[in-house]
Image 1 (tube, rainbow over the protein chains, first blue to last red):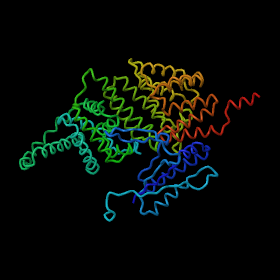
Image 2 (image 1 turned 90 degrees about the vertical axis):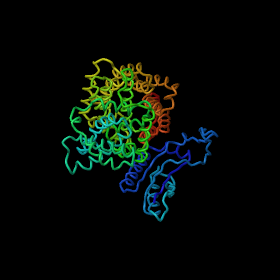
Image 3 (image 1 turned 120 degrees about the vertical axis):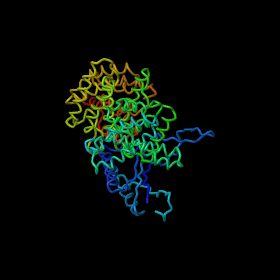
Image 4 (image 1 turned 30 degrees about the vertical axis):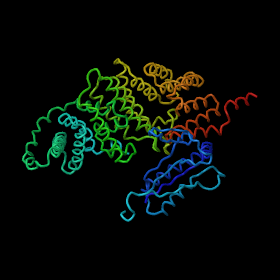
Length: 132
Length: 427
């Protein structure tokens, strides 16, 4: 079963991240590198990616003739932007939750309340369940 | 990641022979797309048979024979299924004599293939993929791995590239004398991009994808062997050898970026540096000096310095000035500004950067912000430097680069500005 784990944040949170002290930034980066490596080594990682920052996000609509109409938003203040994602292939939802919980432990500066929320969604499949 | 030295001898042999065999098959059948498939199948057959049955006496003839068979099979199955019986009879007639392939290979074939794969009608990404397959002898799966895309995606990309070659009527022939210089330039550009894709991949978590760089070096070597008197081919090979030599020092144990000035130069590949320097030293006096040779000369000066303080910056500045006169590339101006700052101080560098703010090709590029941040840091204006490092971090699509830039900003944020400090000291 494939699951997508997603980490998102408001623009404010992206901004906050860029102002972390050096040691905290480095601890966070090292955590993510090790986490990715562990997922790879344990054979559950399908793909992972980080996204460019939300100030580069565009909204695209198609005009009637199909040509793209590109705008810079506007995005509401409270909008959460995807920051990064993993697709993992595991035996059960519980296994996916466990991995998500590990990602959630990514370190933040001292005094930051709580742990990082990770959204877990199952990926749709092209074959009916019973044929798998 | 596999490096060349880890390759099995058979794989290496196949990679060498593939373009030669492909050249022969295309010349005979005039159908590049089908010939390419046939040669891939022949190589696959070889990789299954040779390890158990041993190498044939003439591996190239073996491959050519199998590929020819595949081609004739295809031609026949297309022509008419009803004539199966006749075909059985005809089978014998396809077992032609092998004497022709005992002769010296047609050396131009590989070059003609390269001209075809790097045709300006193709997008650079397609040209790179096709070159890796047709000239590099890599399988679709290997190429997909190098580009970090699924194999099916790469198969489709290659098949579309072959289709556009077919549609555009690019024949399997040498470009005319008039076209030749321009077309060779296109080939070199594709190889340069292939190397860069491997050395400094613009996206993704891994900063470098070694296989593509190795392939670019290997194929450029082939081109140089075929065009030994072309100074720009030699320049390109020297440039990528001298750049690749720093590979081991370019990232730290955690995959983090290490800038040139801070690299542990003991980790540089001395043998490759020697080869690159010998090549560019022998090439420069030959005459027609082009951009690849100048860039190789700059890389050589960096590689020659045992410590970053020993770098001959005035010479690098002079070379960038020459380069700037040859091509109107804003990246050259950016590098020129960095070099000038090393000779005349960061203020001079910042002054030169101003001209780039109105150049739409680079005004919004993360490297302009990164360099400005670096030079501002040197002037002691930490506050402005942090802003530019952060701006650069927000613009780059490379994760290691973003991490590096954020770390630079974080490092400076905790330092009181040098100027303020100096000010306090004087008070």
